Image 1 (cartoon, helix red, strand yellow):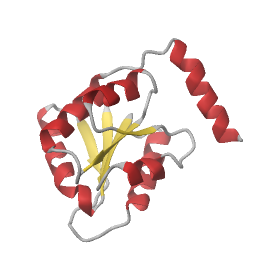
Image 2: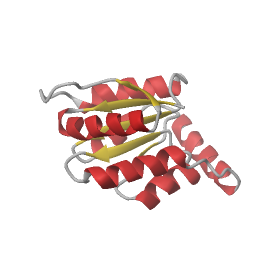
Image 3: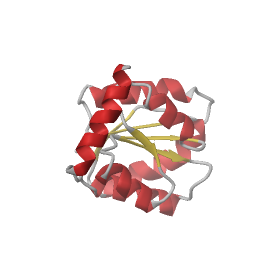
Length: 146
């Protein structure tokens, strides 16, 4: 599995902790930025990362801004992408198992590092269950066509 990471200035610190965590777990990743605390616009980073996931360059993405909400909204504007903002482990599990989410978004200003890393582990380790969830995802895809 290869994961794309991106964070704005509000998510930089959490992204750095996540890089260390992924390295220790031997998970391949690429960091799309930002690399300093200078203010940047999260939609630009979310769009670049979501397109890379859509093209199949990465199996999953993790995006971090102040709350995770802006990154989720921006990433979900890319057709075919399912980004989920999660603040607890069960939501991360369900985002993968039930919604086959490609991208996890986190809030660097609202979640502690320990919980964030646990959420990431649930997101990365949980497979999509398929079954009854497939028809629901097909309905979501149809909404993108309208």
